[in-house]
Amino acid sequence: MGETAKISVAGKDVENAVMSGTVGPDVIDIRKLYAQTGMFTYDPGFTSTASCDSAITYIDGDEGVLLHRGYPIGQLAEKSSFMEVCYLLLNGELPSKDELGTFSHTISRHTMLHEQLANFYSGFRRDAHPMAIMCGVVGALSAFYADSADVTDPYQRMIASHRLIAKMPTIAAMAYKYSIGQPFMHPKNDLSYTGNFLRMTFGVPAEEYVVDPVIEKAMDRIFILHADHEQNASTSTVRLAGSSGANPFACIAAGIACLWGPAHGGANEAALNMLHEIGTPDKIPEYIARAKDKNDPFRLMGFGHRVYKNYDPRATVMQQTVREVFKAMNVSDPVFDTALKLEEIALSDPYFIEKKLFPNVDFYSGIILSAIGFPTTMFTALFALARTVGWVAQWNEMISDPQQKIGRPRQLYTGATERDYVPVEKR
Ligand code: CMC
Image (tube, rainbow, N blue to C red):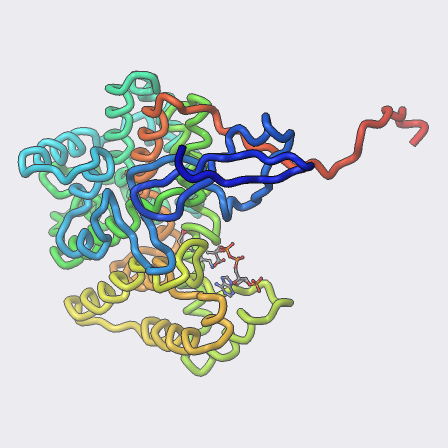
């Protein structure tokens, strides 16, 4: 028997197996703990709980390392493409040239939406948040693609995965077009995944749209940086929803809903709004003071992370991409200078040093997305688009696991104990 962890409760010792992964902290297997002791473990927010086995993404938060199937995010962002990263996340290995060609072709064949789905958009107000539209329309895919909703069939799971990855740019671009009152643009399959998305977003039927290769590359890189991030809140939501056997479209809609929150994917929108509110570098100390004030709910958006206690490696690439995009477009934005100054001041402040709060992926992404022309409300929708591959890869991994069970956490009950009902006239 390998290493064990002894837990002593009520005068009784129970041995729990210690399990090791390929890298990262070992885990104590407590699956039998309740049967052995009649006690649960208590871990709200899952700060010490591994909820599953996974071979997709690895993060070392202390060292600021992020690996997809073993490959460092910096290398993927620099040398790979989003389509290649999608293949890698879904299949475990980098594709050969032929495999990549076939995969990209397959995805491009699924980019169109059932025409009836366009009707859903007109049910929304024109000022609807794109994430509200994404939750609704992605959930509604379940009603249109029932032929890939049998989760027990690996082939149907693959088709559903391809459909979700392929249709998400179409859905997000349509949300944007609807908000500005322009006609929807149909996908064009001779463009790259990212080029097609840019055209559906910024093109109009009246004119030929020429994809700018600099913007295409930057956008593709932004998609790579958001593709997966192990068991974060939205991915855990997708897994939990999927653990009941729910269809993949419903599960991804659940993930989108979770991502929307400002503590998660909604932080990119909140971070840029915050930078605009700060305005000029001379206002930074005021905001730093607010972030440190326990009585003020304000937090520096785009700062801090549950897992990273070091610089988020995605933020490093994102900052570099801002510089490249600005240089190539020959533009500048005073908000970028404010962001750099804010980072510098925060990183030399004892509060941020002690709590190990560093910029995360959302700190700089809004600055590039805004330079490309996206309104802030679209930022989280772009995150959802890119994260879809991570969600489906993790969902597939879970469903393929023969030991998979419905997710069902327990609780520490603190409510009233049993009491008799009192009729309303006697209360
Ligand atoms: N500004 C000021 N103080 C902060 C911040 C911040 N951005 N983040 C954490 N802290 C403080 C927090 O007040 C707490 O202090 P204390 O120990 O004195 O109570 C301490 O640092 C630990 O924070 P926590 O909230 O217990 O940590 P967590 O792991 O539960 O939260 C987080 C992680 C990302 C939700 C949090 O850092 C945060 O709210 N950041 C701002 C929102 C943000 O940028 N989110 C994007 C995360 S990365 C992309 C993604 O996941 O989508």
